[in-house]
Length: 157
Image 1 (cartoon, rainbow, N blue to C red):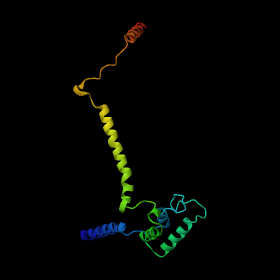
Image 2 (image 1 turned 90 degrees about the vertical axis):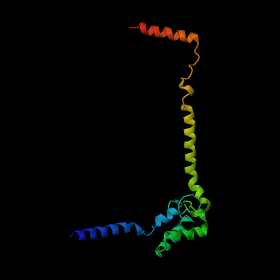
Image 3 (image 1 turned 90 degrees about the horizontal axis):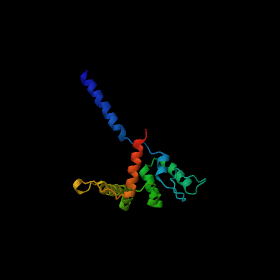
Image 4 (image 1 turned 30 degrees about the horizontal axis):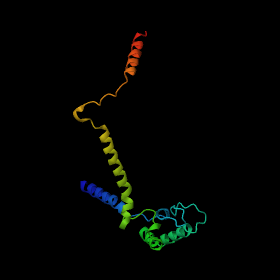
C-alpha cells in the first residue's frame, strides 16, 4: 500500500509541475495591451478611447481574426512589428539598443541613491579628533540678556 501512495503522490506532483508548462492561449485584451494605437493618442490599442478610431478598430479586428486562426501571441506581435516597426510595441524589447530603455531608469535611481549617500555621508561625518564643532560667536550683550532672563525664571514661584 505504501508503494501505491508514493506512486500516486509522484503522479500528482508530475501533473502539478507540468501544469505551468502548458501555456494558456493569449487573450484579445492581452495582445491589444501589448500594442500601441497608431492614431497618435499614445495609448494601447485596448485603451484607445477614440470613437471609431481609424487605427485601433482595424487592429482589434485583425487581432480577433488572427486569434480565431490560432496564431500565437508572438506571431501576431511579429506581424504588427513588421508592418509598423518597433514603435507599435507598448514596451521595448531587449534586442539591439532597446535594452538601454530598460536599464536607464534603474541606473538613474542607483546613481541618485549613491550621490545622496555620498552627500549625506560627508555632512554627518565626525570632525577629525572627535572634537565638537566650535560654538558660534555670541554677542556679549546677548549673553548678559540670557543670564538675566534665566535669573528671572529662577526667582518666579
